[in-house]
Image (cartoon, rainbow, N blue to C red):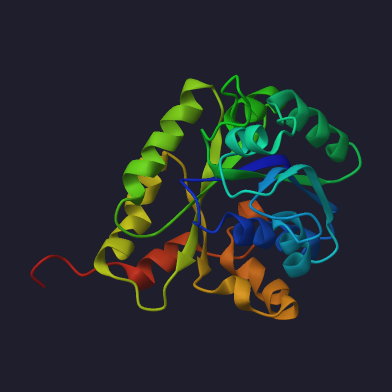
Length: 243
């Protein structure tokens, strides 16, 4: 996989847990893994951030941050308010390339959605992905509203000539509603890319040992797992209207 940029359709969609699952599956294959969080917001100095949470769940990864801002805001805004230098796409690309030189897999986890501003020039994670010529893995929710945000994110990637490798559902409920069931197929159409996994609800609350053992079952072979998209769709396919 080399360098993969992981973004979401918005905030709180399961990016960090999805990143941890991909990291755990890669480690299970015997690959070395680095996780880069370019801008960690809303976390004070000394507190564990998203990269540390990935390491806690996934295991022996190299966890790196480029900048940390205390307020839970977009990186550019948080940097300005804290009086700290913002992180630009060149900074992200340089750090990711250095990690890629000594690791088999580098996972770059963004903040919020794809077009969140990182600096006063309006630079985004998409700009960093374009510089790296890296593919993007999109984490999306399963329910109503996800198709629009997914399609918009992919359009933004296409405009920058960045490839979307696929979509992961960030949280799949044990008893999904009709929209969630229908979105198994519709998400792939909105993303113009395959569905590459579905993380069970509250996966991040598992013990690290249980998380690492189960992670490959949540991800498709393209991400080092054993999850079968066709079988998943067959189990949860909605009945025809009026049936």
